[in-house]
Length: 383
Image (cartoon, rainbow, N blue to C red; front, top):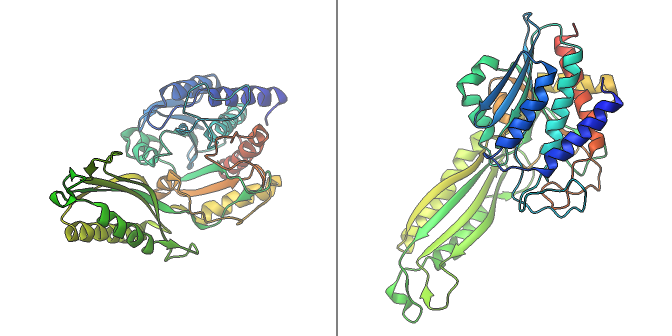
């Protein structure tokens, strides 16, 4: 149970994290802050440097039982915050406008409760994962040899999701977050004088054909097995000048599917379209994959554990707004564990994630941590 003093201290801790955001792969100071906050809780072990700057606190009962992992993430976004609050970001062009500062704080709150009343069996792992925003962090953590020492049997996470009533949890069994992949397409021809474009090889017509062709293979719609969405997020042709006909172009396309199995097919189709356009207009083409997110799939057993816990403590839940098109790399933990993601509402009219005026509502700290604690007690008991 959290005391009033706990909530005051945790709120200030969250706001201090908010002041000092760090981007994916740069979370050295944030990781150090988390490790320092965990140390007074006397976990059995604190692992650092997992998959980059990841931190994990292990609370081991010393008795046989499952390992239950609860996960939060460290990174912030390259967005300039516009909030006029005392704890607004002190780092230009960087901000915690996705709620990760709150996610970390809920996990630290859970650590306080487990430290005071240990579990009866098995292990609790508090996983503070790096680099969620670019999709690389969970894969790097799971691939880290040190992770094998704390391999989870169960894994749970909470993400704040505006548009839901305050304290309401959206979740479901099965797909909860779509797979996504960023595909950079570079087309290369030959520049020429703008007065004599025929002396060069311009990618302009190829781009003009390729954009609607890519759109056509991913029209969105209902999130079912056949869901495909392609979003063109950036296009560049040549340089901003009037004297040179372009010789290069770049297209950024985000691909989304309802599961990992559909992504390979969609990516193959997108690449084939680019290759065809390049050949038609005498261009070379190359590709780069970025922000590669696996689908997040809620295991039915983990879903049942989570909903039973929420029933016990009176938290409202349902499947409003899920599954979601948005991606989350938590699904990687579900490759070898029974995993479930819960989407906690801050209010139906609350600022959207990634908006420059978003700030995590501190009143959610006791709700999220209470859900985590009840899950832990239901699976591992209390010593």
